[in-house]
Image 1: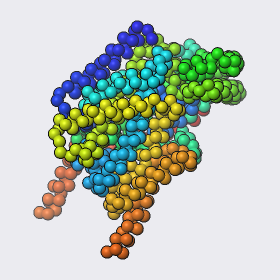
Image 2: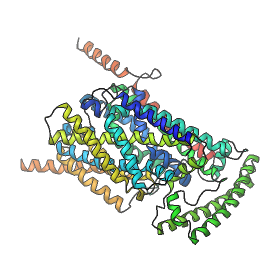
Image 3: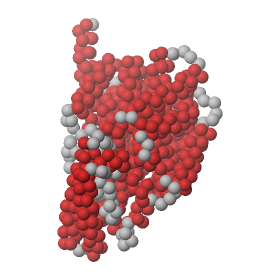
Image 4: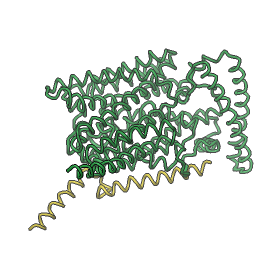
Length: 561
Length: 54
């Protein structure tokens, strides 16, 4: 990075962190530390929930996902607007009226302490693990740029975030989210524009889209219903609906955000606006990845984007052979893509058809070479999955001075937003649902604030520990969502029973949740279905088993009575 | 008297419901409909996008 990049990075980060701490400088009580108080207008709620969901993982993995797999990932978000509507109708009024700090407090009112504790634990475990993954994502940047060991970058990254989160609490998180989202979205838009500018002079935006489309990178919609296909309209609308409903409705990192809304209306509006904006935003992030893919048709892409992994194999004979072949294929492909673009411009359908086949065939060959290289990396004990490095490599290598610093800052502040929310929510749930409810029930406000600060630090350290193992999980974006899907369905099922099945009691719900969670884990271990459907299975299983158990328990009661 | 009280009560609920609504909709139900209509429009646009560029 140049001096200008360092200045941009330092100024942006100092502004965000300083502003957050400045706004939360007043004396804190437990409510303001954990929920930020009920002070936020709708637009701040909207930007806060968006910033919480869009971590550095979104901006690192998103474009990389489109580069390797096309834009079909956008279908994953189709259930989100529907979930926003259901949460606005059902969840928000209940949470606001009960004036709860965490979503799980409500479950004790409806069921019992046991069910509240179980759901709090089902939240704490995956949220802790996914926070670790979210710390790992920006650590990659430091690791790639400075060549540092990932262990130390994890500690450095987590440490900085920890100070910020402990000092600022929820207020700092909410205030900084607004600035973060503007900088992040502006930066991604700028990156997209610069990719197109870096393409050959005769290629405009539409020409780039046409080439990307012919290379199967813009296939956004797939109507085919297939349970084992990760992303299609049906898994997105149905599975995605359940996942987003559980995430926004029962995950404290999000519930804590909209509970900070000034009124029920402000919280509702914030979520509904998120339902309108989120899909186009995700589409644009993926589109940047598709544009980067076209860019690499004119500039030779490395066989492995992860430089640390590359260093393990670059001196081997096998790699030299693969690299030579790669250069040969790239030259042929570049020529074919140029001809394809010209044929597209002339609207010569027959020629386009012919060249498309040739380009796709060459792309297949180059994918095979990448797979062989990844195998080589694995054999040498390296991390073969480089999806998260693709966009980053492009930024560092090709974008102008100053912009690199800005984009690195974006990845940092995106992490800060989501990790701060996550650690804050882990603290909320731990302190309110476990510590204050079961361990120390009568203590002063200042005691609980102090415990909250210590808890924040402890959760931070535990998340850093998880970050140490995150490199083994492949695409970070998918890993976070798979992890969520393993637990969210069950938690959602408990809330669905609480809201809509008044006849099911506490005992039946508790055991139904335990059995459903075991069932979901078994389905995942046996690889029975694509991960989005686990949310549906978990939720439906809790409701069905709850009804069944309630019937059995009800009959027993009658017999015993 | 009872029906008047009921009417006043339902009007109060409606007032509360309208509070904080954006000016381009008259009820929360309309806003929910708008969010769902926007989703359908997005899916249709992406479908067109897929067809147009493949």
